[in-house]
Length: 68
Image 1 (tube, rainbow, N blue to C red):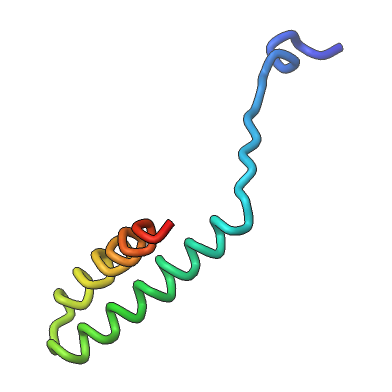
Image 2 (image 1 turned 120 degrees about the vertical axis):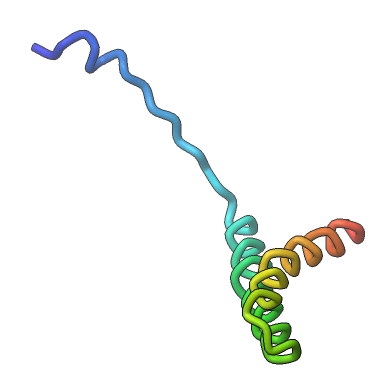
């Protein structure tokens, strides 16, 4: 026989739509790498490249949200 506490446990299932995955991959991974690579090569600074990697995708998301 099962214990009562085992039956009472619940879990939550999160469903993430495919367009969210595509948006994440496009903006965060590809866009972040592109901004990092371009800024690192133009400024010859690793720190500036990392800052561009963080700020670039956020700027892209902001710019595309204006057109929605």
